[in-house]
Image (cartoon, rainbow, N blue to C red; front, side, top):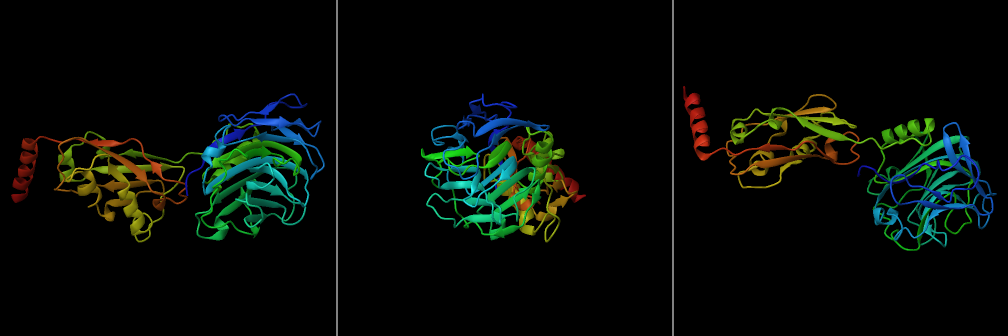
Length: 403
């Protein structure tokens, strides 16, 4: 599961009334949407939390309003960033007045003929909110249903899709106002991807599908599209921010790993042969797995943490072979839910002739939420010492040990 990265965000703050603006700007990049008001079928509106676009036509009416980016292969970067992916998330803040059994599109990516690669669909019948996936060939095989009635009032709808998940129910999750909703039926095919999305006949749209005959009757105040999987916490945080300000500069909170400890100071190879240097790894935005068969999760999980610390170069007697690959999982201590400490054991075989730079990549296996791997900051270095210094230090240690 990869951490979510925002592709495009539409704050929909261009106006508070009327039909003057011609675009909905993507404040993240180049995916601006062109507005077709269709002779008054849409107009701008405003509530205390911010502005939005109001789609007013009766549902399931032909040639109605849409906010659209056509040809996402050539225009913007939605097509390229979602090309052949298995993980997608989206958020929309909306207020739905009515729906229709043919399925009204809150968000849709698909062809001009109407089929969708991915869409968030409203139904008048039960279940009322549905996620469709990879349907460019037609049919509703990959449709997952939620909610027993159309939500009332202004709500935040969030979706996370991850087709790599083993359990069918985990491949698609829908959140209403930050709360996970029960699956009412359907699943997404394991391992399926958006293999045809980066095509000139694909469009991204709000409030309708590209063929202009699946319009919503309601308002959209905010929409955002992600590559990767938003966690439950991120969906909750997004709702909290957007509910108070529809134009909030909300970002998926990042997960970080910061390295401190004595090994991050001035260290040379004799410090490694002697042992005892500490590496303290502090997380924000996630926590370490609780101890299982290993100090952090299973023994394999802890080993994966050690394996994530690698040197850019790999001499035969360098870090990768003599420290990383020989370290015992018992050298790791889960100091707290967010802090792990590695006390590096003595490795007599460590011998380098050039400085090594070590980078720590925290694996999903060691994390509780595990939205994605984390590259730690900063890196740290280990300096070589001269042959005379090394020999003297090692002989001194032997002499001292002999008394």
